[in-house]
Length: 241
Ligand code: ZN
Image (cartoon, rainbow, N blue to C red):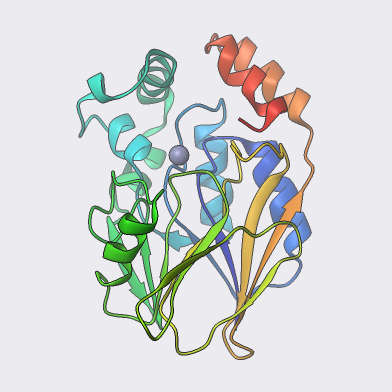
């Protein structure tokens, strides 16, 4: 089975459409949360994911847009975007987001937004955090997002944890070692490369491949401006920060 793994789409329709066009034939689309927030196209992105039959989990921005979370945790631009999203989304979008679980197990994969220890909130940024997370799921592999940076953390037989920093075209063979795979962000990459980031997994060949694809950033930036969302949210897309 060929599965597309998408995370942190953040209501950026041109980025999602570029990714879907680049994917070619896939058997499934799995998403790892933060479908909305920051970006100007929440209803359009959810509609596209529904058309694609996507399944997945909720992120902190999705929960906040539903009003299930205190937005005092967010910086001011993120908070303004969450409040804008909460006002704008349709009842259908709201119902779809509300139906996303915080954790899912699909085949050999556990899906979370942040980490298996704290699915909604924890950022896996350090080796100790990754080591603790690698012991916190029941399947061989865990897929997560939230950092907006593509990564793979892998535990060797001796318990040593290594970090791989994938770029466009990087492949990882999925063997007996436990691994955390982060596809990076479709709609707001933060690793200095502004292109949309995603992962394709071949479950028979046991291989994960990271990809980057350019999209019309200026279109999203113009729509952020037209929506009255903070200018910084448009500017950062061009920098990939
Ligand atoms: Zn996010």
